[in-house]
Image 1 (cartoon, rainbow, N blue to C red):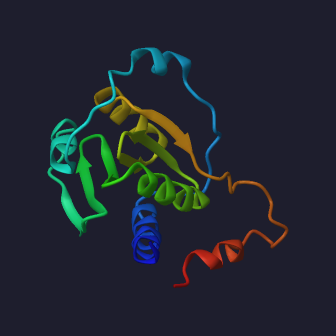
Image 2: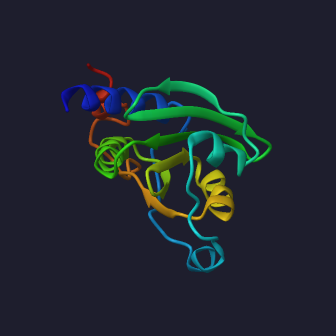
Image 3: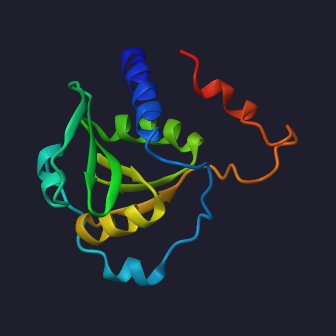
Length: 152
């Protein structure tokens, strides 16, 4: 399980390099919830195809497959998992970085709020928000509170 945790931590760091900023208001969009299609299922490639993305595979392991996607709608990271538990562990670690996460069964898409909203219209799923880092940390506005995210 330690190997998976290391992969998950590395994947979270990579995924979040595409997410700019560290804030999220955590508000849900009730109208969007009513308009979302049934949650998509499938392989990383099948999910990417539903968004018109040609995935740029970054991680190809038994436990985790991850790709960068870029289309006219924006850039995001798509990750698929071999187990529900692995997905939840990855998501719990990644949420410390903030951002928006579109979550389906054994997959997660990570991107800017507008991109996630667009993806939800194609893939369904539920939106989860990461930690809100927009408040004052008392550190003079620097990113020292993030220093633990970069160690191995």
